[in-house]
Image (tube, rainbow, N blue to C red):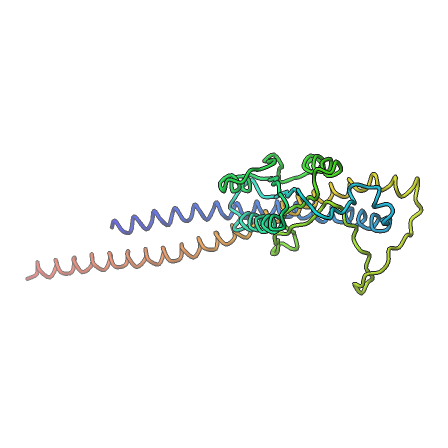
Length: 294
């Protein structure tokens, strides 16, 4: 019963694979919950920063702050691409890389030079494969990114922007909408563009100055603007991690379900083969007994 033994071996192999994918699904679910908590915790601070900057912003102040400078003809910009260090997450990394390629093509089409900074092994591997020179690369950002990680990534770029060597900084990341929706997104973080205040109906309204400022708006913006940029990168990091774990959980759940379907087919095939073997053996016994009888 060579075919039966072969089927039993395949069944055992698929069962072992299903155990692995189920375990990975459970691990990803646990990590996704913690990553989602970090996303939720980061949003109130980001909203408060945006609200304060929006209220303090004025054209007069903008002229005195390099981070608010709006270049008229960008010559050189930086694109930060966030990917993961590991695979087994479906099309997560492929979608991020595709979004980055689209953004690069759009910027270069306008005659602006793009330098690419990549975080994560998957993105680094792809751009090296296509022969794209990288301005910087990092693989040491874990699935628990910190504010220090964000500072390390963007502080040098802010210094270049202030010095007039860069005309813009973009970041491509996975926007965490829900556990089932983490679309890739590209956001411009430099120059800082203050959010427009909106009414409850979503209609733009004038800036409302409702703060008692000490020492003054200029001193406050000096501290807040770099924090706003760093926070934008930090939010991109934590949302990308949450998106990665969500994508991995979905991929491992699909793999576990597919393994179950394959097992059902293999077991039915094995049972049919075993039944056919038994029927053949019975027929041979009956035929042998009939031959002895006469």
